[in-house]
Image 1: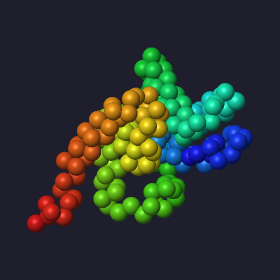
Image 2 (image 1 turned 90 degrees about the vertical axis):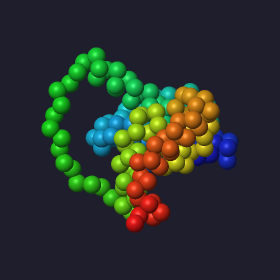
Image 3 (image 1 turned 135 degrees about the vertical axis):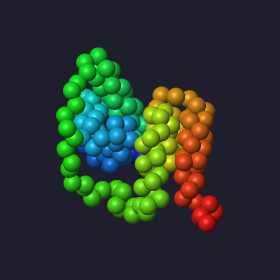
Length: 175
């Protein structure tokens, strides 16, 4: 999102946050693999971003927000490992109409997302940012805090794993 290159003044935080909310939630869902944890993570990341908004230079707002989201996720993981929690029984909540219904994924899309969720976090985040969210490589690399060549390597490996796992869905392999 290039909000700052088109205007001379930085827009209100709320305008930017609302525009990026769907992306932040989808990325958080891929990080946490849980609806409730993703909502908590997005809320905390937006709180931290709002506090730092006046210090933000305005470049690559999506990458900046995802970086905050990712850093907060790592903080939560560190806290949980130092203070183990007793898991509460999962509560089944009704699915909300969201992005995936708008895109109208077919069975292949669902299988693909299920396999993406099973990838190691480094690969899962590279695929999520570049292939699902269609972020440019340089912005995705910045959001993940890695060099662009490392991101490309992770994408190559993640795509190779996904191709192997989903080969049975290809029409060429069907009898």
